[in-house]
Length: 213
Image 1 (spheres, rainbow, N blue to C red):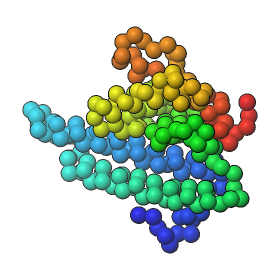
Image 2: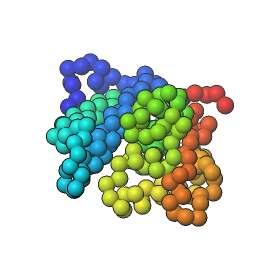
Image 3: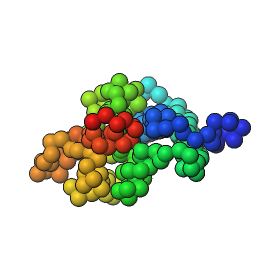
Image 4: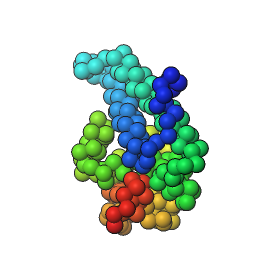
């Protein structure tokens, strides 16, 4: 829960970088929680199947870890949203860069998270490793499979639908906010997931508030 006794809980963000500090910490908790859930599923399958070998952590330990991480993730999300509300209502402050992009291009919450995730390796490979290291091999950047994993799709439809965020005529690519490398996807559908996704200079500058070309 949001701590209403903390005077900083509802304080407006001081700017784009202050906002990104909070969102990147939230992404770190989210990545840790998703990784812990994957470990839990693997451990449960091992105990239900023929593999009776003991793991590093018991199902009970992993369930506690997932619960604790989820609580931290949700509490931070509430605090960020409270500060975002305060920032947006403060008429003396400029609009946050990510808010401007989302409004200008009608981005949905998943597309907003995609931009946040891609901002991390663009800011610093070391920051990317610290943020996503429990879940992804993120020092070199992110491919589409890794980006979509952060969206946490829950079923086949979720994975299939997530592909459309990267359609050539979709908002992210059509607006020049991200690019895919190589540009042309492989003919086989699984080749799609190996494409690297990166922020463009325009996307990076808008999100971070950096005005350098």
